[in-house]
Length: 284
Image (cartoon, rainbow, N blue to C red; front, side):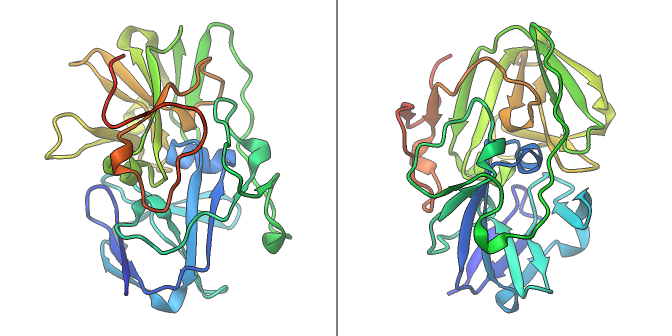
């Protein structure tokens, strides 16, 4: 049976016949920047069983490292499947899957680059860079950023959008709702909440695209139109800035307080570790 997938806005739709042969979570700085999540999980299947249903002609691509082009939906920023004809594979961001792929994560890679605020608590194998079966591939990372006392710094994948935040966040949560999974194209989102007065764009605000889910009261994702990298959503009406933690360049000084909307979590993802789990949205 085919496994369907789509972006947050529904413009991109695809099907994969499978079977999926690999599922791995990547903690590299480039994946964190692109998805805005603590890690990105990818699933691989034979390319011959992949087909676009809609939206392939609208994709925007960004070369995140030499020879590596990441594509995304220009409307909502969701990460598009990567077609690898030379390997006979398609690599899909598991967060965009609509159906259970019948496979579960098998390992973590680039754990040497993981976010300082994120803890890996499952028992899966952990690789500092690529696992042995991908040996020989050249790793790529985003340049490190020098911390500034009293401020938290962040930027998009290409670096054209950047921002800074003063002081401590109001809260930090890892969200498993279907919208966060689609918007971040990951197992879950990880968002920090700040008062709007704490937040300031330092460059590239004009490059930020925001997409609000039409039927949602206020759910909105934002991203850089050039690279697709996750960016904050600033709501003047609510007086808050919602910052995707994976896009940060420096440590925010807080760790996630809870997993939220766990009743909507991906069927292929298991929540482990001591962080509390909440069915809905907690009070801050």
